Image 1: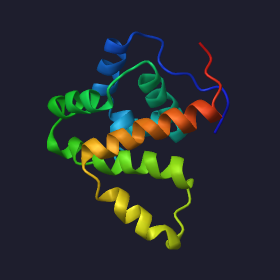
Image 2: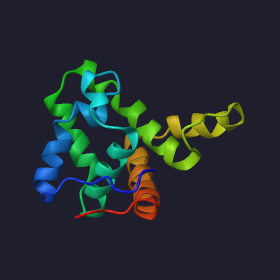
Image 3: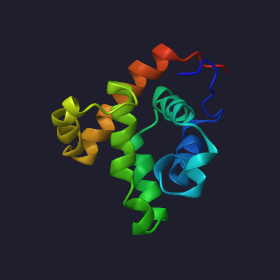
Amino acid sequence: MKDFYKPYDCDVKEYEARLASSLEIWDDFSHEWSYSTFDEKLVILAGFVLKGGDLKSAIARYAEEHSEIYRSRIHWVVFNYIWCMMMGKERPIDQKPTADRIKRLEMDELLRLLAEELKMCVKRDTVFVF
C-alpha cells in the first residue's frame, strides 16, 4: 500500500454522506470506480471507521439513494475489500474455502469484519496525513 493516501477531512456526519452517495466506493462496475485506486478506497473507508463512523449506516443510506442496479454490487465490493486486506490481491485456488465462507456472511457480519480489517491493516500500513 502506498504511504500517503489521505482520508476525507470532515466530520463523521459529512463523511457518511459522502460515502452514502459514492459509486466510486460501492460500485465496481461504475465509471466512478476508476476515480481512485483500490488502496485509496481502503484509506477513505478506514478514515471513516477510525473517526467512529458506522459502515452499516453509510451503506443503508447508499442503498436508499440508489436503485437496485447499483445496490447489487455492494456485497461483492465489501467482500473484495476484506479479501484484499486478508489475503492480498491475488486469489490462489487453495483459498477457495475461505472465500466461499466470507461470501456467505450476512451483511452485518461482513461490515463488522470489514471495519476490523480496516482498523488493523490500513492503520498499520498507512501513514495518515492530516
